[in-house]
Every structure is written in C-alpha cells, then in structure tokens.
Image 1 (tube, rainbow, N blue to C red):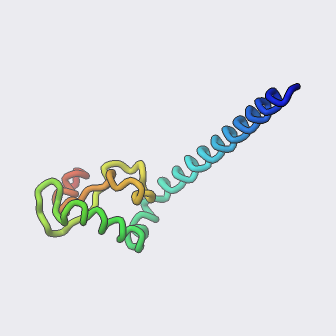
Image 2 (cartoon, rainbow, N blue to C red; image 1 turned 180 degrees about the vertical axis):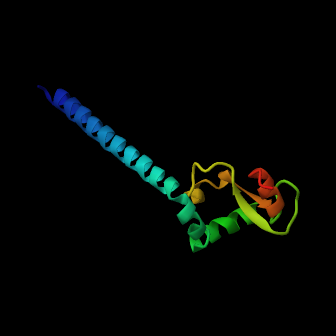
Image 3 (cartoon, one colour; image 1 turned 60 degrees about the vertical axis):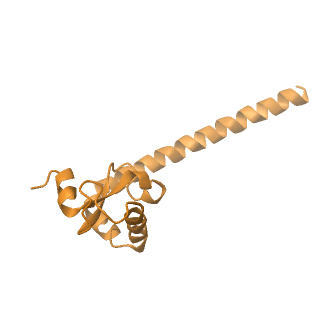
Length: 112
C-alpha cells in the first residue's frame, strides 16, 4: 500500500468509528428522553420552579412584549410549548414557546 491508500484506509476507519459512536450517542439521548417523558408528570412541576426555567420564561415574556399572543391580555401570563419536542432544552429552541394568558392557555389545552 502506498501513502495515499494508507491515509484513505485510516480515514475510512475513523469515519466508521465516529459514525458508530454518534449512533450510540443518538440512541442514548433517545432513551434518556423517553425516560424523562415517562417521568414528566413528577419532574415537570419541579422544573418550572427552577432558576433555569425562570430565565427562559423571562426571555419569552420579553420577546412577546409581556402580552398574550392570542388576545393581547397582559394579566396571568404563562408560557406555552407549541410542541414538547424540546422539553427541558427550551433555551436553544425559544421559537417553540409562546406567551399566553391563563384563559388562552387553557383553551390551547382544551381544558374547561
């Protein structure tokens, strides 16, 4: 084998190894996410009391000018997840959050 062939073989080996490691990490993240979602009813209320969530909440409120995105109400404001895809990782996905008043938030969740 010449130098070029050796380098190509090494590159192929490195790419395969990194691909395998990435697949392992992706699967671990999926498993952890599934576990978090199973336990969400217990952990979510606690999460909403953290400084981390309060910082995120304030960023969203500020972005939305401290008013409900549905009715422009400025009272009883809450933060609504458009999806739960980024739950516990909202800081990197603020676009997945909106400000709603408690009435509009209940309507979004179809609560009486």
